[in-house]
Length: 294
Ligand SMILES: [Zn+2]
Image (cartoon, rainbow, N blue to C red; front, side, top):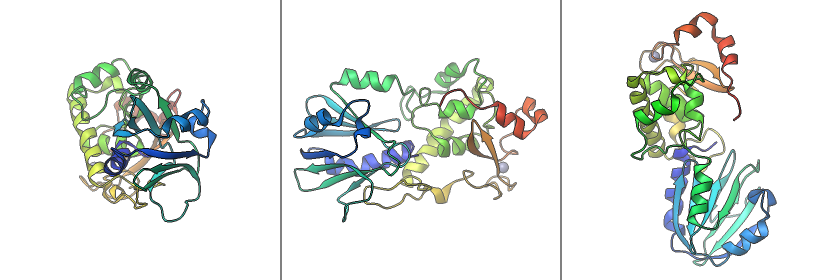
């Protein structure tokens, strides 16, 4: 699934093409895109709207339109936005025609992606506040804030980092990379990290995300740029998907474990396993650590 760096890559590629343009036509071909609402009213309201700004919040693209309306796009598993594709792509869900002749197409083979139109800033803020926690690269993203959120939490720190309602934008790739950079084992209970570990993890999250943005995202799945090209961050992973390969820091083989049902890559020398879980063994702990809900 595209994470913060992949969505930010799309945002940066789209902004110069969309900002200031008027939408002259919209066809929403898949009613699931706007659910629970019907696509008709969204289609009508997008026609004639001017794109003022292409922003991002967590993994959402936030397209601000004239009249203080916001189209919030989430790509989920397999969504992609393509600018001027040469032929009509398979799995096209939405077609957007701009006043300068360019065409934006939303494709999504698995159809989990969504497009929600919020009719003013207050509605947009309420929508995002209910779904997203603190945003990396903002002044609020501090070690103190994270430690406070995690206080008393027994869930593994990786599950905590993945929870969009706590930290916005981090998914499976960047959680693994950040925990490795910080030297923190993904199974460590979130409430048990020291202040020093929170400080390292906070910095490591931003470093991992910045490295991902720098590489224009990771394409280990369907992620594509607006011109159909692939990102290159998958070639720079430190531990993610690197099971059996030497740890870039100490040379010991990277291990794959399961945390909260997610494949997780770790160097257990650089990221020491918490004491209580060393006794109970890998498989059992991984099973105990399945989080509730998403
Ligand atoms: Zn290591």
